[in-house]
Length: 312
Ligand SMILES: Nc1ncnc2c1ncn2[C@@H]1O[C@H](COP(=O)(O)OP(=O)(O)O)[C@@H](O)[C@H]1O
Ligand SMILES: CC(C)(COP(=O)(O)O)[C@@H](O)C(=O)NCCC(=O)O
Image (cartoon, rainbow, N blue to C red):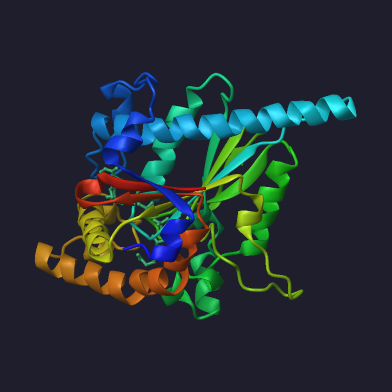
């Protein structure tokens, strides 16, 4: 699973040893609040929140506090200070549970008194709209490095980091399978920004000026959500089937024509999309970014955390 050399850069925790690091942080979410966090077809348990995500939120909280303390020192030295948001990146394959992890972490971090404002943005909003992907003949490469408007993504990061007010991020819809025209998510001087997407640890293609830009240059802490490939395929198909029952039956859905497929046909279609697009992307462009992460969250069956690796 992990290479020997890779393991040497990390401290390794099994489930019991990681969960003990919660160190009496109270379980701050009720079952009712948890419901609000659940994405489609999810069965995330309170046990998982307690054992996996509370220790994670405690660790991140300590990093944020240490950053805030250091800024105070610089402020004292300079005689003035300003707020700089702490950036967290969450990477990993399509369907591994990045957005679920991001939303749980957001909710948990929101509850620490030191940083009340936690914003969450997904990099799929920075995909080129379908019209542009078609123009470039890369519709079948959605999610690959060349399908993102990296310049706009980097500008967004730089603007938020610089403390600009009301910075807008475009929004992607899994229902229309496209960027939502005239819709934005507004980020207004958060204490923490969580940026979630399969490309956050990638080296991007060079831009027109020949410059290669890295989203990771802006990150203060990065997480790679990891699972075995067979598991990922299963989760992707499962999510596709759930979408088919709900969102795909919406007449505005790009996949509306799949709504009437029987289960067997739907599984075949989902597996084909997974194998021809997302699996190729995982192998070519995502998996190798795993060893850049500060923390790797490895999940097994039923999305249960099995191992956590924390960079020395
Ligand atoms: N911790 C979890 N427990 C149970 N189901 C989960 C968990 N995380 C993700 N899932 C499910 O796995 C699928 C993929 O999760 P999602 O967060 O949409 O992934 P991503 O953002 O990486 O594409 C979804 O069907 C989601 O409901
Ligand atoms: C929009 C995405 C690239 C982003 O993935 P996610 O943020 O859900 O992990 C992906 O969901 C996608 O649409 N991939 C292209 C092939 C497919 O239809 O699954």
